[in-house]
Image (cartoon, rainbow, N blue to C red; front, side, top):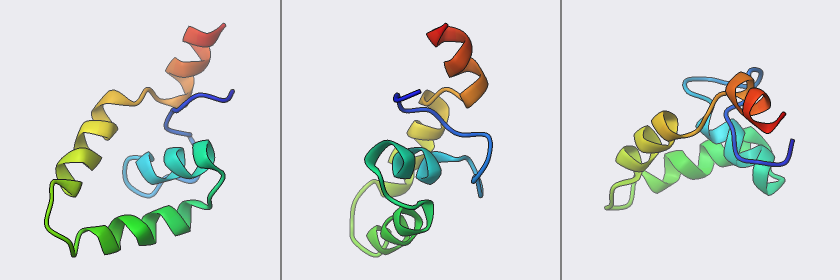
Length: 67
């Protein structure tokens, strides 16, 4: 599976950072640190995280749709 989906394992809250890390070849921890640091800057980072959490399918739904 090569798409963007929230994995079942490696989640901390919603699995968004784990999904982005898997998709772009980074560790989930690196993406989490980058997300945390980005919250120090002005902008809609938290809102984007929430939107991704709602919009990204879970691993089960992605696998069912891909088959």
